[in-house]
Length: 275
Image (cartoon, rainbow, N blue to C red):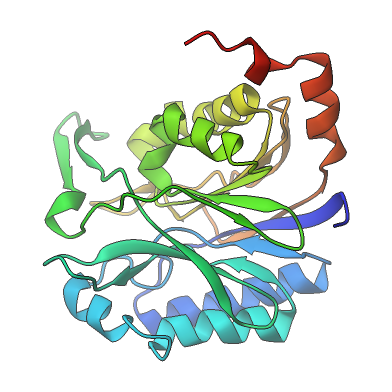
């Protein structure tokens, strides 16, 4: 393993169709690869945000031949990238599909997947003061498995969006030797303004790991505004790179995994835990 890795977070503004979303994704992945990225993280629901029938999509994506799963494999292969494929609805044994994040290697093989554990059921005040209700559990089933996957780069921990508010998940990933944790997200503008980067930094600091947050963005969406703010955070909590505009784009940083060992030697937080 090389201790220095070029990583990228892809920020996307949802388009009017799946085809448009995939075209925009492909362009940004090519941009990241041409800039030397070895790993790229896509946002949550990057292909299907706003689509009406997640169960039908989940059935279509339940095999390797699913159209967006095939797209992820092709993109990883053609760009020679490790790819965290945001999330896709994928049908399982329950009535609702899972929100599943795929980890794909540069040969285009899916080596691991993670089903989002924490589902976003909340009432959030919007810009006009009226509460907006989110009931993710109406459309998705919750996963149960914590996933830290060894790769040729390092061990990568997989999480999604609302998971960010549950530090015990990130502690389990760190205990499983995850040195980099991916956070594909569709974080709302109402919560993202105050919480998104704070939570990314907190999870990095308390676990002494790198965190990559890849978010959807659309601040002007009339009903479901999205914060953006995709960022790469180091184990000291420093923001190595971020994208603050209301546009799609690529966030990149060269990370040095030696920093984790250095910080843990000087401040062995894991050894000091009492509870």
